[in-house]
Amino acid sequence: MADGVTSFSLDISVEEKDPILDKFLIWCKENGLILSKKVKVCSRGSCHRYGMVATDDISQGECLFSIPRNLLLEPKTCSVALETENVGKSQRGSGWIPLLLALMYEYTNPASFWRPYLDIIPGIGVLDQPMFWTKNDREQLLKGTEIEEDVEQDLKCIEKEYSSVVKAFIKKNKNKFDKTIHSLALYKHMAAFIMAYSFTENNPGCQGDNAPVMVPMADILNHHSNNNAHLEFAKEELRMVSTQPIAKDQEVFNTYGQLANCHLLQSYGFVEKTPNPNDTMDIPVAIVYDVLRQHSISKHEARILDAKFQLMEEMGLASSDDVFVFDLKGYQNQGPDLSVVLKVLHLSEEELKMILKKDQETENHPKDLEDLVRLFENCSEEQKSINSKIIENAFNVKDRKRRNESLVDNESMSGVANKKAKARRGGCRNDDDDVVDDDDNEDYDDDDNDDEPGHYAVNGVYDSDDDDNENDVDDESNDDLDASNDDDDDVEDDGDDDIDSEHDESKSEDGDDEKIDHMTYEQMKKEFPLAWRQALSRVAEDCSSRIVTMEKEKKISTENTDELTTREQSIKLMLGGLKDILRHVCELVDKPDNEESS
Image (cartoon, rainbow, N blue to C red; front, side, top):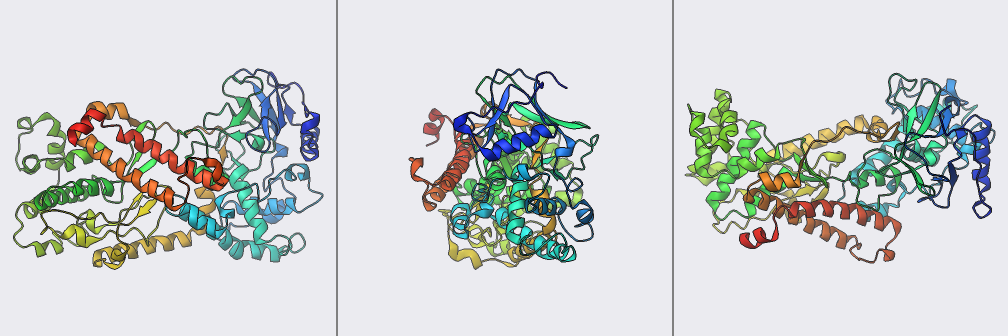
């Protein structure tokens, strides 16, 4: 056995005495779980309910406890292994069904081998995931957030799965299951338990098959993004190993994955109170376009901006459905290229004509435009013809009514004003709210250019400036809505698979995700022209103001968090994390630059 794991410590002081925990620890000892003398399980000193605390200084790489595989609760080790072996395989069900059935049976079986472990399972009142909130709380607190639809989808999938698969299984196995005991309410409780406490073994060299398993003792450790321990899977046992030095009296933390606060809240019912380094802010490309358009000084400038956006969509450089992902470090280099989008949208008329000119010599162009020149020059002849028509139409509008006609076939995108703007990240789909109003963006007869922005989403935060415009949608937008509804139908069909796929972030053996490539804020300050940074700063200010409005609507804008419920505090912290990121984006333009631009 590894160094430091020499004996079992049942160190519970008188004031901490907990019969249920005491029974669990004795069960662990009797069944081969080995706990280091340097740690103890207790409630005191833990950030939430039970936890593990160091009783002595711990070095990096020490084994804190080891768990024999026979203690893992999974379908193949449970008392109804034969009955659950094939369930869900012939029906459209999630990979969680066998474990859920195993948990339901063992949880309601007084003689279960895992009884001492199951007795410490937190009740629904402790498992405070949003799926257990009242409908009123969900509607009030989650409305407009990234997880609003995800939570409803979780509930929908669980209920559908129970109705279509589990009920039939219970009926078939009446000797072991009873529908009055193994109810939908219990099924939801067990689903929440798996979401919050299960582990997934991802190492193909070991025995696991990527299905979730329950790991006694390991699931007692609380989460922190800067964890100091992680779980390692081996052939015969699992080991919790320290990943950094842990001082005496310090809590031992595992990590549940690189999860933003919104996903921690959805799956585990809590958020990190300190700035969460995994929080992200999704800014749709459509918002960047919209903010630039609001600052267009004339109808001609707005028309040229529309043409540039249409060019990007035609070239596949970006679309109104795409999002830019920012975090506390900077812009995540995934999805559309931020610098290319900003460069195209800020091209002058002369530069726009220049890069589209045929038979060019690239050495005659400014160095900073060479990449765009090559990009447009390498297009097919058909694409070049489409590009030319777009620019021709923008520069030579003789009949503005012709703007309602498609320049290319009906499948071509005709500008962001005709498209939905939604953030796809996190599966957020509010198809009733995210229709863009076409009429405002099509009218170039007003030199004041006082177009109001349409509907768009900020990290799943949906907003509309004029609810009366919801029905003012042209045929193309209706096609989009039909397509979205088709997508929803697909979700409905695949709903049974969503529980495990959406929560594949259940604790893995190490919690280490791939490193994300960034363009840092410092790099943006150095490399981006002032106009680009000003545009991003305006976008961030716009998004921040909408979040502030949302906080007021949810009545969580108070600075005195003691006045808020735990749920309200979680939402406030979640939205506060987004504002922290936006603050970094705003600071791309420093005060002197702001004064100069104003």
